[in-house]
Image 1 (cartoon, rainbow, N blue to C red):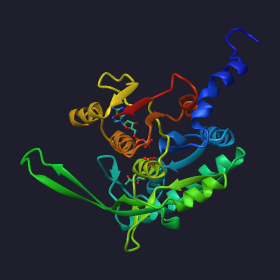
Image 2 (image 1 turned 45 degrees about the horizontal axis):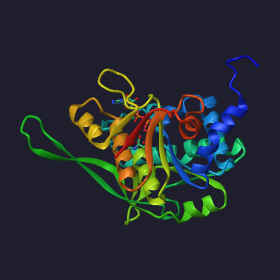
Image 3 (image 1 turned 90 degrees about the vertical axis):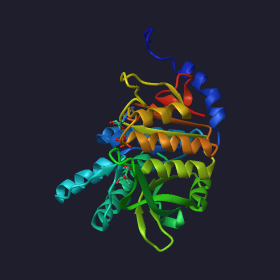
Image 4 (image 1 turned 180 degrees about the horizontal axis):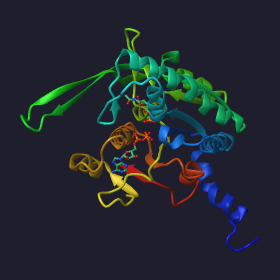
Length: 294
Ligand SMILES: Nc1ncnc2c1ncn2[C@@H]1O[C@H](COP(=O)(O)OP(=O)(O)O)[C@@H](O)[C@H]1O
Ligand SMILES: CC(=O)N[C@@H](CCC(=O)OP(=O)(O)O)C(=O)O
């Protein structure tokens, strides 16, 4: 063994306190569409989740699929627009969104985990009444008139309540739930929900120990482009206000704030393309990415 070869006994000994800390705890992992990347990245993610399950942690995966929806829309020659990181969703768009998220993406993620030796079952937020949703309304202030406008994003929803029964049944049977971010309204209407928001709602409802948000950037980057290792809720709000936290990062940080307010012990945004990002975050002192704290 050369000097720079990691000593497996050292790694194991170092992981022990963390294994105790997370034993039988729920860790919600949001797996973003951008973090999925190549097939090998997805398989590696699957192996990490299977390992968590095998060492006694209870992972719950909520996946995105924005880029995968974009690819399908391109094939269908349909344009899509985003407001504050959310896809404006009309009826035809909703069909494509649900087809992609609850179809191939959901099955690929569940399959990658199952292939790695844990049992994973893919469900959508509509199954078993998991995510009850309502239409989301967003307000923006018009810079010219300074008047507040209500934006209509179509069938974009927000979670109203989460029924954890199905998740608990799966967790209790040592099965990893893999959730697609669509929800159902009281009237039976399907809603497209940002996957970050669904992950936060589920983490909050389950009283998760940790919420990990895997994306394609190292975490929250400051105005100088440097990674910010830790941020308070107030600092996040100031970053959104100042505009250097923008686009898809907005629902991510807002979700972290929501989860912490619901009692989740820690919420972290990290780069899911880095090998073993999840294990590094949970089982080492250094952690990775940006930790949002109260
Ligand atoms: N301050 C910031 N730090 C890091 N990324 C940011 C920031 N502001 C905006 N972003 C954008 O947010 C993106 C992450 O959101 P998104 O593309 O929706 O990811 P995912 O598909 O993983 O949910 C980054 O790729 C980056 O373009
Ligand atoms: C309302 C809304 O924007 N929904 C998202 C759902 C998928 C998602 O959130 O995927 P990522 O995590 O990969 O971005 C969308 O239509 O793209």
